[in-house]
Image (cartoon, rainbow, N blue to C red; front, side, top):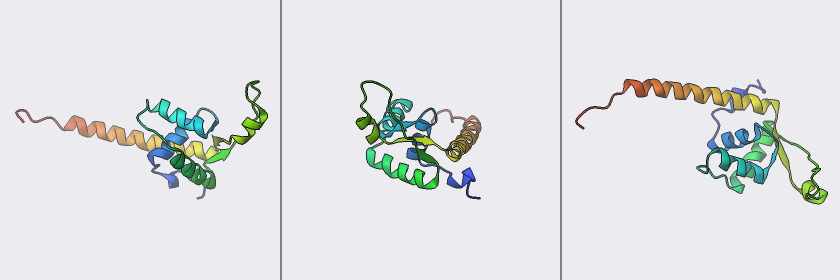
Length: 124
C-alpha cells in the first residue's frame, strides 16, 4: 500500500531529525538546521547538503511538502520571504514519524530488559 508508513522505516538519523524539527511547525532550511541542533543539544549537526538532499527525497515521497509563506513581520520584506522555501509534514509524514517513534520505543524497551538481565561480573 502506497500510504503505509512502515514502508519508509527505519529512518536514517538525518531524516528522523528533519521530521522531528517539522513536527511542531513549518520551517525553512536554515530553521530546520537550527531546530535539529537545538533538539539534539548540539550533538547532531545537519549540513546543507545532507538537509537538502533528504528534503528533496522526502518531497518526492510525499512525506514533506512545501508550505508557501508570506511574512507579516515588518522587518521581513516580501522579496526575502518569497525566496525562502518552507517545509511541513504531510499527513503521511506524521504517520511515518509516529511509526518510527513507536519502533524506537520498542527497541529501547528491549534494550532495558537486556541491560537488567546482564549483571556486571565482580572482580573484573
